[in-house]
Amino acid sequence: MPEPAYVAAVVGVAAALTWGLRAAPFAVLGRMRDSVAVHHLSRHMPLGVMLILAAYTLRDIPTTTPMAALPIVAAVTVTVGLHLWRRNALVSILAGTAVHVALATALAGV
Image 1: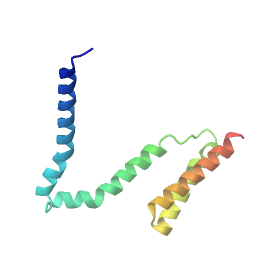
Image 2: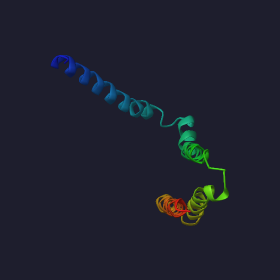
Image 3: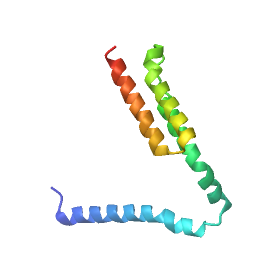
C-alpha cells in the first residue's frame, strides 16, 4: 500500500492538472474573442460535430435485409422531419429514439 503522503501528492497533481486543463481554454478564449477564426468556428463547428456524429451512428446500418435497417431509417426520418418542422432538437431526438426503440423491440420478436 502506498504511503498516504504519496497518494495525497498524486491526487494533488491530478487535481491541479485537471483544473489547469479545464481553465486554459477560457483564459485563451478571452484574448481571442474578436478573432475571425473563432467566429468562423462558432458558426460552423456545431453543424460539423453533428455531421460527424450522424456519420458515426449510421456507419453500421445492417444491410442484410430491409427489415434490419427499418428501425434506423425510420428513426432518422422522424428525427430529421420533426427537427425541420418544429426546430426543437430535444423533441426530435426523443421522438426519433422512441421510434427506434419501438420498432427494434417490435421487430426483435419477428
